[in-house]
Image 1 (cartoon, rainbow, N blue to C red):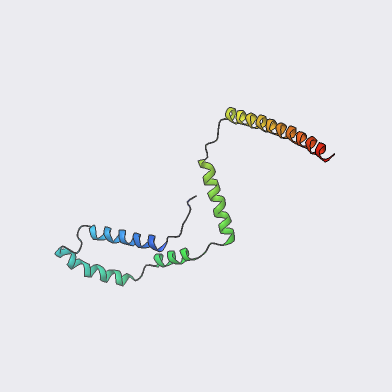
Image 2: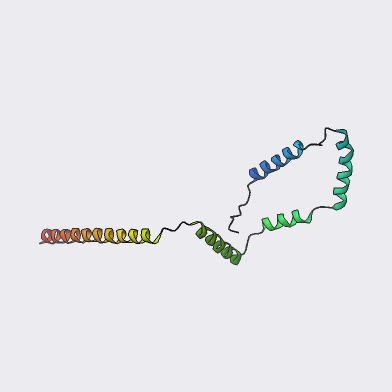
Length: 129
């Protein structure tokens, strides 16, 4: 839950296939031994008899389909919930101290801007008379 699903690009898919091929080639009992060459036709025949895997096909179709409007909203809120669990909230005393600092700075800046505005207003009225 909370994982963001991304579509893989063609390059990523090719790299993944290459890694899987390398892993299958590196497994013991691969094509090099005589026992493996005897077993491999039997294994291939068993795979053919079993038929194609339906789960792979269903996964491909599910990945190609775009999620609906409500599914996107639902996914968004699941991700928001997961991200809020990761937030480190400050202790109460630190939050209060930060709030006081912000209020003091806002009042100082607004006072300075007000004084500057009054000064410029008086200056402009003197110039226009």
